[in-house]
Structures are given as structure tokens and as C-alpha cells.
Image 1: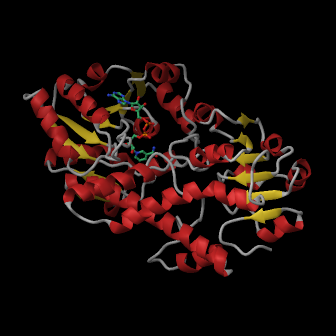
Image 2: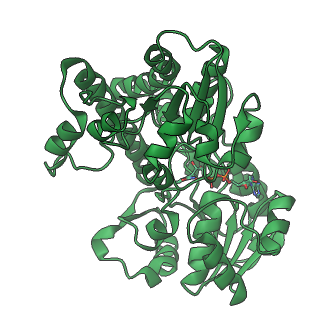
Image 3: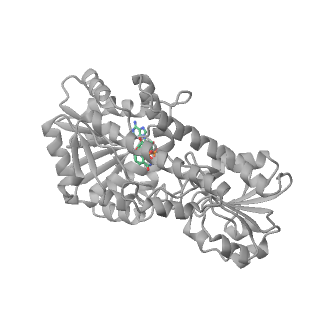
Length: 436
Ligand code: NAD
């Protein structure tokens, strides 16, 4: 099957390369010529475990190609996936659909056969109708069916998620398009129960409902952690105690500095906007959004309080900048709120991240970056753990203790047992666990 993928970011590149690995012929298109040139040289523009090997294998086999122009890539394919960004629109929080709409116009002008246009980008309910109208207005004779195929992959585990998805959701109101989509995913040999054929509007909403639910779950355990911290309970045990109930489930019950990334924050806000426009009050989603924003704003105050009330003139090491481990994605990372607040409070910040420092440098220009975590800790009055990288779990704590000026560790990821940290001479502040 021939496939074009419009947008070669986290979703487009992983999906495109994976489809090529299934045996399809795929062209990944991006308007960013620098990105496409780098991919042409075999360089991977993002950090994603296993992606370099996957791209090398599929380009090597000739099944994966890259291009900057949409028209030749879509002219004679069965499916064109739209995987461009849908960021928050500045000012109002609605999803910015301008990239999706621009891509739809170009696709409509270029298709020459019956083509399924499948939206992988996360788009508000009703966007498929709008794409259909754009196609009709742009090219009245084009034979296209517009389908919603939301993507659920997680950065850091994206290839595994794409190959072994919990479900593939296909929102198609057209029988022919359903068959084409089923054929695209056939190599996955999914059990029938994991392949969900629903209406286009339902598929669009499944994605937002999933992300809003996850945002709520994270916000819930974060607030329970706050309560644990005050009443002397242990949030890790509370999480285990509730997570063993299959109605609740153990995943996404890890307290932290507030969710970030390219999806949860913008999608929860966009869903709230959709509901407002529909005259429906999603008060739970709304509370999760506000709670998460407040949590990020409170991070610096927690460090300040742990450091005795002032950070003026103090040196703070920050370990981890990406919004979660195993990605270099800085979008909506808690670091973008915490680090400027630490600087504003008078701290000199030295930061380290195993993958995100290149991306962070332009976003957080007023700090120093170090090649390893120990250099960040040298002479520090406090060390903050912000991202749950495995490399930090494996830190040589005795060496860290020796390098720091004051033995204060504020751990927003609960990477270490409080007792072990106390025994090593640290003053250890973590989330919702009794101090040792
Ligand atoms: P991204 O910013 O990494 O990539 C988007 C790419 O699209 C960019 O490279 C951009 O240059 C390109 N682009 C924009 N307009 C274009 C056009 N007209 N023609 C060609 N290329 C164009 O974004 P992403 O993280 O891959 O997300 C894409 C979509 O998938 C978003 O809607 C997002 O919400 C959704 N999504 C993301 C994830 C994730 O983990 N990143 C997971 C599931 C769904």
C-alpha cells in the first residue's frame, strides 16, 4: 500500500517509519526543509529510543522516503495521513488548526485517485467535517474520504506503542475508507476487539477524552500526594493500594511536578474550549487544568521553603529538563515554569538533562548547562530532581553528597527511598512521603 504522511514530527516520523516497516511504501513530508535534509543524511531530528535504527532499516529497504513537497507525494497514494501540529492557539487555548487546514488544501489539489485523508493530528470534534468542506471547496472533483485516526503513542515508548497499540481507533463514515484503513493496519494482526470502528466525530472525541482523563488522573494523585505530605501518609502506598483495583488501574498514579508535554496540557485546555462552545460544563477537566497549572507555579516555592525561605545568591542544580524521561521534548515541561522562577528568586541555576539540553538552551537561556549531573551538583546549595531519567536513579549518591555545598535534595519524582537518602546524609524532600 502507498502512504503519504504529512508532518514528520514525533507522530509523523514514528508512524511513517513504522508503516514502512510493516511493508507499505511511505513518503514522509515536512515543510521544514532543514528537518528533511537532515533525515536524508540519516540524522534523526528528535530523541526517541529505537527510531534511528527503524529509520535506517526502512530507508535502506527503499520503503521510506522523505520530501518537502506535498503534491508529488500524495498524487498516487491510497492514504494521506495528516500528522501536523495542532498547538494551542495563542490567546484562547483552542486548538490551532491552521496547519491541518493548509495541509488539507494542498492534498485536495494534488490527489488523482480515490484517496483516504486520515487525520492523525489531535483535532477537535467536528474538524473532519471542516476538512471535508475544505477538500470539496478546493477541488470539487477530488475523490476523497476524510477519516479520523487519532494517535495514542507515547513519546519515549513511541515505536513499541505504534507496533503494539492498546487500540486503533478509526472514525470513518464511509465503507470504502474503512476497508482501506483496515488494510493499512492489517500487518499488526490486531485482535478484532482492539480495532475500533466508530463515527468520525466519536473518534475525534475519544482522543480528547483519553487525554483529559489522564490529565485528571495525574492531577488527582498529585493532590493526594499533597494531602499525604501534610497528614503523614505515604502516597506511594496509597497509589499501590488504589491502583490494584482494576477499576482504577496502577498506571498514571505517580506523583510529580505536574504533567507537561505536547499533548495533555493543550488537549485538556482545548477540550474545555470545545465544551464551552457546546454549552457543556466539563468542571472536572477544568479543575484538572487549573490544578496542574497551579502545581507548576508552586514548584519554586517548595524549593525555596526547603532551602530555608530564600534562594538569593544560592546555587541550585536542576536534574532533568524534558517533561518526562526518554524524550527531548520540552513542550510545556515543568522546567519552563520552575527554572525561570528559581532565577527570579535569585538562584544561580546549573542544569543537566541526558537528551533535552539542546532543545532547552533557547527556551531557558539564563542558566548554565553541564555535561553531567555531578558537575551540576558541584557547590550546590540544593539539588532538584525534575525528570525521572533512569540515569538519575543510578546516581552515585556518596559522590553527589561530597560535591554539594549543602546536602539538600528536592525530588519531584520520588526516585529514592527517604530512609536511604537520610542515611547518606541528605536532607531529602519528596512528594507525599513521610520524612525518614
Ligand atoms: P511536531 O511539532 O513534532 O511535528 C509536526 C510537524 O508538522 C512539524 O515538523 C512541522 O514542520 C510539520 N508541518 C506543519 N505544517 C505542515 C504542512 N502544511 N506540510 C508539511 N509539514 C507540516 O508534532 P507532533 O508531536 O508529531 O504532533 C503532531 C500531532 O499529533 C498533534 O496534533 C499532536 O497533538 C498529536 N499527537 C502527538 C503525540 C506526541 O506524543 N507527540 C501523541 C499523539 C498525538
